[in-house]
Amino acid sequence: MIKIMFVCHGNICRSPMAEFIFKDLAEKSGVLQNFSVSSSATSAEEIWGDIGNPVYPPARAELLKHGITCDGKRAVQLRKSDYGKYDLFIAMDSSNVRNIMKIFGSDSDGKVHKLLEFAGDGGDVADPWYSRRFDTAYNDILKGCTALLESLLKNSEN
Image (cartoon, rainbow, N blue to C red):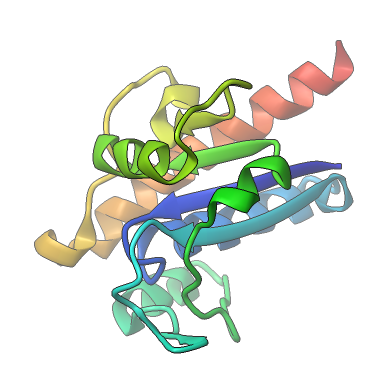
């Protein structure tokens, strides 16, 4: 089983969108059982005590437009101890990568990547928090998750 953690700043927009888009793609491909998929934040801004905020309503609405639900998801913060629990940490942008590295200290096993690397594009997933363009973020994430899934399935065949 491949364990994937999608990561963004607050875990209420892009990383939960990626978590549920990837799960949807894997389920439709009949391979969801081969993956454990989660998402987390590099900050604690959306977490109050032990309870994180739910997925931001416009992000949830964008997922629903595509028949994807994210019911029950609440923000959680990435922890240093997560490094040994997951195979891949997929960041939404360069700032997320820097913050992941601050949390982990290093990436000796090469587990940290930006999502759009898998689509042949080292760019950042558009941040809808500022642009309000949840459709653009969805399209970026779908492109990255599709390429990530294809890459993982191809590598599992080799």
